Length: 130
Image 1 (cartoon, rainbow, N blue to C red):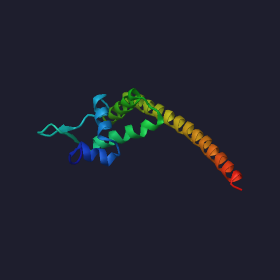
Image 2: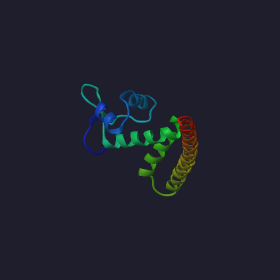
Image 3: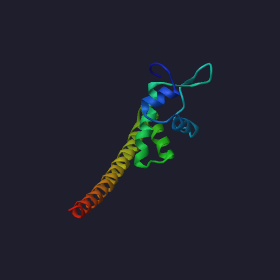
Image 4: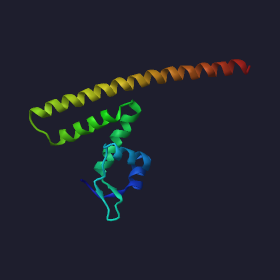
């Protein structure tokens, strides 16, 4: 753990997620707060926020909760594993990288199609306004 602890509201604001979303990620086991206050409030560290940021970045690429869990576990294990097992973890991380690149490309293609459609509609507006 690094740095100070913050309550869920501050964590949500800093990461740009709702409190409800963060609680959901805790319920499904993706991010567990590092501590609880005496009043049982969730307390998060910067490391916890980094996990939330990874999840937030994976979401628009269509990764499932299970894939998110798998990537987070891989990252956790890479931080502490040495030797032969490390190579297998790096291969797994490379697979996630490839999947992310593929999904980014698909989104680029969807965006290009959407932009073309918007241009066509604008052309129709311009054509009929004259």
